[in-house]
Amino acid sequence: MQDQLTPKAIVAALDSHIIGQKEAKRAVAVALRNRWRRQQLGAELRDEVTPKNILMIGPTGCGKTEISRRLAKLADAPFVKVEATKFTEVGYVGRDVEQIARDLVEEAIRLEKERRRLAVKDKAEAAAMTRLLDALTGKDSSQATRESFRMRLNEGHLDNSEIEIELEAAPSMPFELPGGGAQMINLGEMMKGLGGPQMKRRKMNVHAAWAKLVEEEADKRLDQDEVSRQALADAEANGIVFLDEIDKIAVSDVRGGSVSREGVQRDLLPLIEGTTVATKYGPMKTDHILFIASGAFHVAKPSDLLPELQGRLPIRVELKGLTEDDFVAILSDTKASLPEQYKALIGTEGVTIAFTDDGIRAVARIAAEVNGEVENIGARRLQTVMEKLLEEVSFDAENRQGETLTVDAAYVESQLRDIARNTDLSRYVL
Ligand SMILES: Nc1ncnc2c1ncn2[C@@H]1O[C@H](COP(=O)(O)OP(=O)(O)OP(=O)(O)O)[C@@H](O)[C@H]1O
Figure 1 (cartoon, helix red, strand yellow):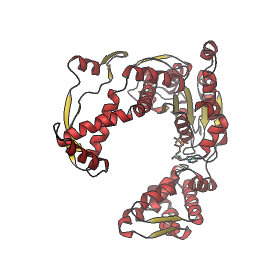
Figure 2 (figure 1 turned 180 degrees about the vertical axis):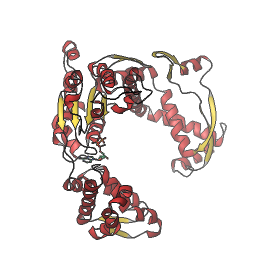
Figure 3 (figure 1 turned 90 degrees about the vertical axis):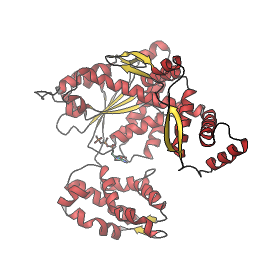
Figure 4 (figure 1 turned 45 degrees about the vertical axis):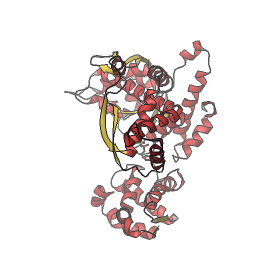
């Protein structure tokens, strides 16, 4: 799978979700491909090749996070987003930036469990069904009773019935002791030594109970040590960290109380240059994490960053502010676009929504106008505009079953024109 993710294939996949921003897409595509290329090298050279981190420069809401998140999803890579300014807040101390690496490992654990749960799904479901039937019919119930309940369960008839089931009380995963990630105790193992994990009775509906039981049975079948080992390796080799608002820590002028911006840059540096962070799953090397830093750079310039940091973000790409035409394309040409989402949601109530081309154009125009007059929040504006546009039908849908609502320019005007014209009002509503 990974070997088919050539830069062109990656860009094509990103194109179905993100309009424009060609340069940024190419940069992340090459960065991802370089990871695969590195894996093909001999061990000696492989260690020498470090990622070329990326600095994305562009206004808010133009696709910086979206490109990075989609890239991670495509590569099935662990991904975390952090606001760089978070570390300038009062109460933060230097070491806290290491939390970024720990969060990345947690994310890798989640992904690894998800992959492995799939492999044990059939067995876990069978065991969960036995426990569910025990709870519903009693352990000694006849085969016939169990069969009839099994059928009703499978058909979903019992989904909303309340049931009491026994679930593990303590999580069977290692936890961290205060004062250091390297020390750890495996609570699950300790519990086993004491005669198995503690169970706790809980009431919930059958639907929720089924999900919990399957998860518990799947986790029992996972080798937790193996999960930790794989996840750690995955975070080290494939992790992607998105560092937002890097421009806001570019000028070292904050005094009095909060951590200075330059201080935060200095703290981040070892993480980006490559260091080892103690996590509860073991030490993690950060050398090969891909960092994508991003910012609008309206005031500060990339050259205001510490020289060492500039050197660690060698690939610079500029993303453009989005225009009305881009908004039309975002609404019409992306996968699972907002209009498609609303159509499907309202469709569940038996109401059909039909967007016409001039309706879409009108939404795009209003979004662009409000961005120009109030504040430019990029494509995020489309969400507030669409929400307001369809507020009435969203609320009323149950009384309009069988109807078709045509969203054309006239309808958009009627719903939004007054608000859009009134700058004060649109400041609050759109
Ligand atoms: N070029 C684009 N094509 C399609 N959708 C976009 C585009 N740019 C932004 N969006 C949509 O707008 C929303 C916000 O975008 P995103 O989170 O990428 O902003 P950003 O550029 O990272 O801004 P910030 O720096 O403020 O986080 C997302 O829901 C995204 O889907």
